[in-house]
Image 1 (cartoon, one colour):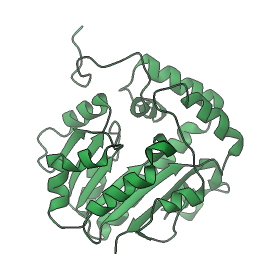
Image 2: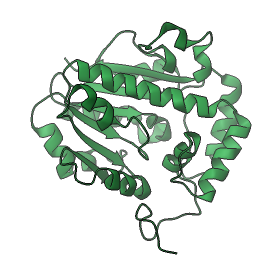
Image 3: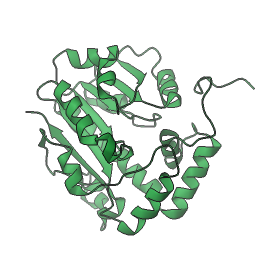
Image 4: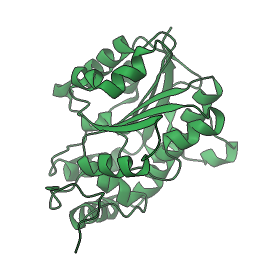
Length: 268
């Protein structure tokens, strides 16, 4: 059988990958048996996970829409994963037809699939890079061109920094990115937290500890500190459904059950 174009040669199909597991949660098809097995085990532990992942994607779309309405035309999506309906370039261009987007991921499958989707689009690109080496990421020609124009850029770190350990210094990664962002730029960030469901946090982290990408769930104070140097946009750092919901009733009676914290900050 001919290898699909979205599977790069030499791809490790035996080890679960967070981008592809996330694709499983969202009902996607660009994943392998190891990813599906990991997703199944996680959902057995925490049945609400697919709903949480959908809430995270909904936050991303609302944040991108908000920033596009504020005039943003440049977006850098770090840890973008495998594109799904409502990708950043699609959402941004509803308001800003000329929006430019660079997608960044460490997973070659995610990058290959993104590249296929973006074929013929000269205002969007996908690159393979590791956010844990932000200086190398910033040196990539696509990223350098996006940031080098001097226009405000929206940098997205959506559901990725919880895969960066304390030893790898997530706040330090954000600082390097912040220092490269033009004035007026924005940071869009969501992060898993143990505060909403402490009963689920331990077993979930234990499961991910057995993979190449351990999970570090953090407190609200930890997440707020990631916005150091940014001015938080109302409503600040809140649970995923609470960030500028399209309809008040969509928040639900227990937004903390979504566990993810989210916020958007602007550089002065």
